[in-house]
Image (cartoon, rainbow, N blue to C red; front, side):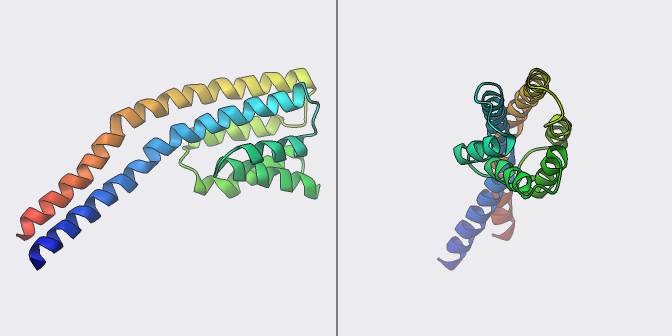
Length: 171
């Protein structure tokens, strides 16, 4: 009986590990979609609402879930301090929140380049930079969806199968 309980425990732990290892594959497309929605909201706030960047970021942070909301919340807070330019505040916010995300360096580079343009241009140019960032993020979203379809199920299955192998070896 104890042997069976140990086998079930090993199998459950290995399966859980597989699911945890597969989580970034499902989180990355979700977070990219949140970033797309956030940038579209930012565009609307800036272009049509003529909302200052700090307030627009705060509004966007309230609409999103973690960790993307943390990015905009931190950005809004840094802008409120008034010690850094919008670009520097954006990059500081990115670096602070980035470890919490499932995003890759490609997305970091896109967002960092976007941040360099914040607050430096007129409304029309700013809108063009937002559209450019949206286009790049849409490409990354498609890639993330492919990676999810390709790898998520495999990693989950490997966790279960590794647990099953370990149980068989120990019996």
